[in-house]
Length: 203
Image: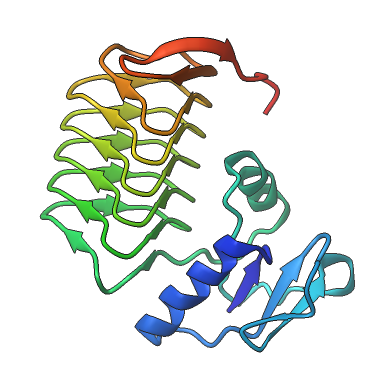
């Protein structure tokens, strides 16, 4: 398989792949590589590389917008990656290209879209629905029946109470406590969470 994106996030993806012993990583591709190799795996500039369309590709980029742009450029097979030290409940759906990192807990009847990141120690409670390109950061918690719109990021250690809706391409700051619905593109910080500005809506 190939990885696209040679950053710190890539190192965690490599660790998950090695822990599962599922794929051989042939090369890491990057638009602007800063390293020649990561963990002994060669890093190649994207302009210098031709993909085999029969191979698996994983987008090892943490930025939600760049991850979405990259998936539009490259149409390969996108596997789901799950660290072996994860708890996943009954009737959970995880779509193509998403990753669940060590220590995460996903409880029953959760739906996770394409190219999402459930980061280290994150908790996603029952009946949550995450649209594509969502990132739930380390130690963030979603209570039951939370909907997270496309491209939104729930910051490290943030908490969203049950039944709330987070709009698309919103940013929830680190440690924020969300007790109300959050509109599209909003940037929310604090306890209780307050909107401080809006993200650019040009995806």
